[in-house]
Amino acid sequence: MNRDVIIACDFPDRETTLAFLDRFEGVRKPFVKIGMELFYGAGPEIVREIKARGHRIFLDLKLHDIPNTVKKAMRVLSALDVDMVNVHASGTVAMMRAALEGLTRADGTRPLLIAVTQLTSTSEEVLQRELLVSASMDDTISRYAQNAREAGLDGVVCSPLEAAGVKEACGKDFLTVTPGIRFPDAAADDQVRITTPARAREIGSDFIVVGRPITAAADPVAAYQRCIEEFV
Ligand code: C5P
Image 1 (cartoon, protein in one colour):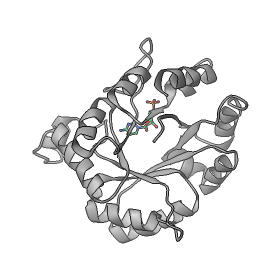
Image 2 (cartoon, rainbow, N blue to C red):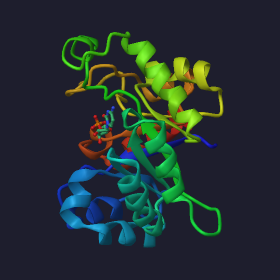
Image 3 (cartoon, helix red, strand yellow):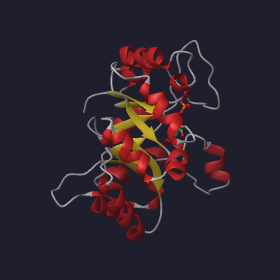
Image 4 (cartoon, helix red, strand yellow):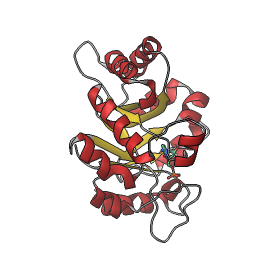
């Protein structure tokens, strides 16, 4: 799998998103991440529209429900012709297998399916005291990644700092998709476990997900190109 930079298009509406993507015309077609805000606000049409412009799309909806519901929802997302979708690994191996089944088209093709292990906003303290998970954060992430692998998924979303451990537990071909990326000279915003594009490459991330360092930059195209130069 070739390394790539995915831009998190965390915009509230269609117009802002398309105007943002217009800036990349003639440069390079970025791989874009559409999350809950844009998808719930603009609907499936925004996915078709961005796809028609030639972008690859990671639809970040983090499904988590009973296996049958997830399977049927995945069938709908697969028909949207996205390139990558995700589920919560805590939904169980049975749910992840059902997701994979729903996602696989009649001709055998399907988008990449990755699992969220633990959200990077969850601390080890909350994991243990509130969610009553007695294992450490690292052991939980490693086990959830192994569950995803056992279910036949392609990889996980994790902090770049966890990517090496995931590769060790699941093999080097198991994909790691890593948000929490910042340039060395920039603010962390609300992210905690962060690293730079260059370091993410060294650690072994396959895809970095970059939002504000590109979307809020004075020159988003230059910031994107800097990510490409350092990571790809
Ligand atoms: O702006 P920033 O680069 O922090 O954006 C990171 C993107 O990755 C956001 O869309 C955020 O929702 C997403 N994300 C994350 N941490 C996770 C999973 C997804 O930051 N564990």
